Structure formats: structure tokens, C-alpha cells
Length: 474
Image 1 (spheres, helix red, strand yellow):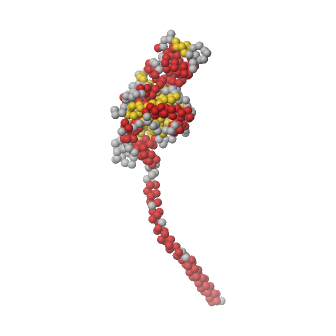
Image 2 (image 1 turned 180 degrees about the vertical axis):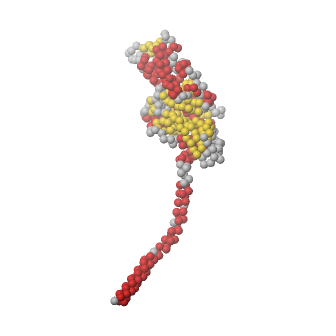
């Protein structure tokens, strides 16, 4: 069954838009059947700013992936990033009707669904709710409450929000490209699926995904994500520094960074000089690789220090036994591992998305540059596996989510409404029978006439008695 399923990941980045078509083989490894790439001109720092340009780039990337894989693409898993991404911790609880019955997956799903109803700041909405731990009848430290007995179920959740406008723009771009979105996934979470091992997540690790417009951070401990953040700095800002510092064009600055850039200036030779073509009718320019390394080191040091400050702000710096894993296109700079270790004091390695990949014709996907795209495909398979393990969960969540939140009040109206509506038809015939006797309504007028007649007789008798009394008195 797994071999028949095709999952497509769409990475909408600042520098490129990449579509990957994947399928799992008989060994459970991911095979990339097709890949399409297009230059991203409508996205800046992870946020869509030009709908039309982004739609054209998505169409080009999808067309290339379809031609290479021979598969018509209609549904994709899309990544989202940007400075608007926020994360917070929240505690929720539910009260079960009886403590004798075991806690089921439905109870956990309902508690998780309640978290999606939290009131968020205006203009933002929840995209991920990830459980941290649970409490059963105030007994904490429970990682899996299913099967336990208890009345009160509590949970600590890590909640990630994004701007509604950014989500709507992504939806609009994908829809205009003729596609449908299966899942909207935070990009650092997708990268962690393809790059990190379960042992690293258990020991404690910080994933730093250095992209073109943003640097994404995801911190794991005890196999659970503890913090996620997106910083609005990436490889493009280094390119801009090189452009200004060396007085070259943007394309030349990018080539200098990729081919000759080093993250530690001491590793560059004082005597190496690169000659690059000048503008038309102007002599070529010479750029010292030492000066180039100084420019790169200054900006990369700032990015790493900002990321580490975010880790320190959350108090997680002492919980990273597995150190730091660098991935993304910006992680391919020479000597970046050594610079990170020097600034943070933590073990560092470069993360490649090849541990889950099988043999394939497309070797380019094994680059850190495609860690997010591969992770989106893997995340799609994980979501499918969860739905298979819990059949009908999607329908059940939609059907029972809203009634569950109002369950304490639901029993009261439930009996009343049926008892009110069902007797109504049966009660209607009952009044219908007396309705036939309503013609006897003229009885009241006859009774009134009889009373009037008796009243007249009484008044006449009274008058006669009074006259007789007067006559006798005289």
C-alpha cells in the first residue's frame, strides 16, 4: 500500500520554489521520482509579497516535477515560514464522565482539538498543536495517557501560530496554480523530520535551518519539540553585504559566496585574489578572499548569536546534549561548523536529508538545500500513517469537536428538545378533538341569558316586596 501512495512537497522559499514527488519503496525508504525548481521572485523573508510571480514560479516547478516523474500533481504539502511565526505554551484539560473507563485516543484527540479553539491575537491563527506531557487526576509526568483510568485529563501543549494574511496568501497562490493543500507544515518541523534522528531528539538538539531569507530554529528534548522560531535573516543578507563591501553585482556576490566564501577569516589566505568581470567597457575587479571571509564571518556570527540568544532566552542552552545541527542552503559555507562551535560551545554537524532516502536517480536532493522539501514529503507520509492508525479520525474530529466543547451543556437541551418536538405532533390531534366541541361555545351566551332572566325576576320580586312593605308601613 505504501508503494502506491505518492506524496508531493512544495517548498515556497525566498530564493527558490521547489517541488518534490516522493514514493516509499518496499524497504520503507523514500524515493524521489521527480523534482522541479524555479526562481522565487515574489517571496521575501519567507512571506509572499507578489501573488502573480509566486503563482508563475509554482507552476514552473510543478510542471518540471510532473515531466520528470510522469505523475499528474493535484495535492501538495506546503511549508510555511516567516518572522510572523510565534510559539507559546498552554495548558488544557477535560473532565471525563467516568473514571472507571480507560482513557482512549478519542479523549486525547478531543483535548488536542480544544487547543485549536484558543483565542489568538487578532490576525493570527493556530497551525500546529503539539503535546508535551499529560496529567491524569493531577498525576503529572505522563507521556501517553491512553489506557489509564481517571476523570480529569490535562495536557501541556506547544502551540505555533502564524499570521492569517500569510496563510491566506499561500492558499491563494497554491489554489491559483491549480493545486490543493493537504497540510500546511512549519518548515523547521519539516526539516527536522528529514535531518534529525530519534536519538538526537531524545538527547536534546537544536536544528538551525539557514535559508535564503530566514533562519529557522527548532529545539527538541526528550523526543518532543520544546521551541520553534523564525529569524528574518538568511543567506541573502550575506550576499547583500558582499555586494556592498566588494562593490559587485548581486549575481557576482552570490557566486563569490558560494564558490570562495569561508565563515572564518583566519582560514582564508592573505594572498588569494579573485578577478571578476567588470561592467561593460570597464576593467575587471579584483577581490581579496581574506576581505570576503571577513564580511561573511561578521554576518554569520551575528546570525548564530541571534539564534543562540533565542535558545538562551527559553532556558534550553543546558539541555542540548546532541548539540546543534545546521542545514539549509546557507549551511554549506566552508568552516561554518567550526564557527558555530566556537560561538556556542556546542557540538555541531551539517544535516543531510539522506538518512531516509533510498536509491534514486536524483542525487541533488541529498543536499542540505533540499532538507525542507524532503521533510515535507516525509511529513505527508507520517500524517497518512496517523490517519491509518486512527481510521475515521478526520471525520470524527470535525463531527465531535464542537459538540465536545459544549458537552456539559449538551445533555440539558438534548432531552428537552426531543421531548418537546416529538409530543408536539401527538399533542396536536388531542386538541383537535376538543376543537370539534368548540361549536358548543354558544353555551356561555345561553348561560348568560339564563342568569339575566333570573336577575330580572329577582329584581321584580324585590320591587313587589318593597311596595308591600311601604303600604303596610303607612
